[in-house]
Image 1: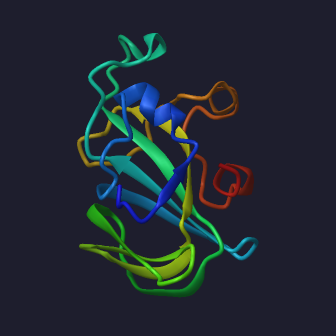
Image 2: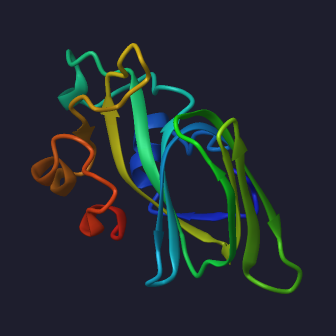
Length: 167
């Protein structure tokens, strides 16, 4: 993860990976914009799979971990490009002088997104799934948090405000 960001709620990732995995490169699944906050939420597949998995995931053939990154107090949003699927995207940040804010750029084949936001970024909705041969994530997701596991068996549509708005 870029050093300019302060990740909040990283316990699930640390429990899975032993540390926060590199979040600079990923497969970008969705971008959710919410005027309340305002926030930008990225749903992404991590570039690596943990060596040790929870007992609930054993024997399930999962091979990909997904999570959300939610950026708070977003301003100066620019999105001149969004053509999913985005199989490989990168996240680059730059601190703004004298503020607790950063400039964020997400780029890749099919995405060009930029904005400024608070340096604190929330991590949530960690899940594992078996990626399909066409790269889709429409299969069953095994969520790390019990509340997510009780509520969802797969990823809901991007209009689902309680899923995308609350990390």
